[in-house]
Length: 192
Image (cartoon, rainbow, N blue to C red; front, side):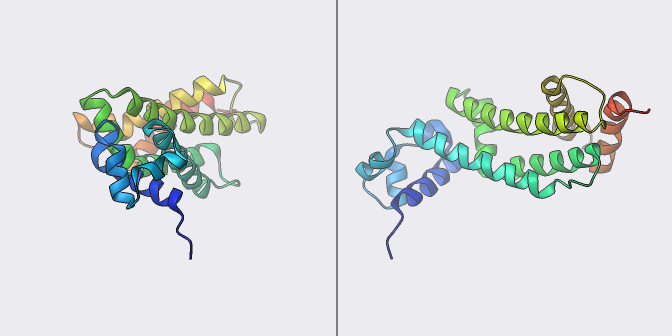
């Protein structure tokens, strides 16, 4: 059975980035973890940046699958949004690479780590934007700018779910749902 060297390299690099961060990961480390010569890596990737981009693309795809698995086409927009954002936040907080990148950005400010986190956030925003537009088209939401609305929704959810707890008692998911509906549902839903 042939060994998929490319896959082996990507898995080793993901492990290295997750453990050591972007800045501290070297191609030598990746080669050692993948049990390949450093030259083998360069047959698939020109540099560390390309390798990192490949891993971030996989992470974004995995996150989209998590979101789609949570989405109920028959459910209301706000119920779906709350469930999907909850799962995405859980995914982001539990996925070691995303956590390590956030710490690296906070502690060191590594530009490539920041770029990776921004790509992750932009993928979430794009997903929400599409769902907002679909809800507008169905008449479930008032006319609004889907891009701005997606941004406000994500930032509000992140503020309630994670930033609030830096100085207060963490909010339970039910309370976040209640607040989310208080701040957004009555302002955006038609007929209220």
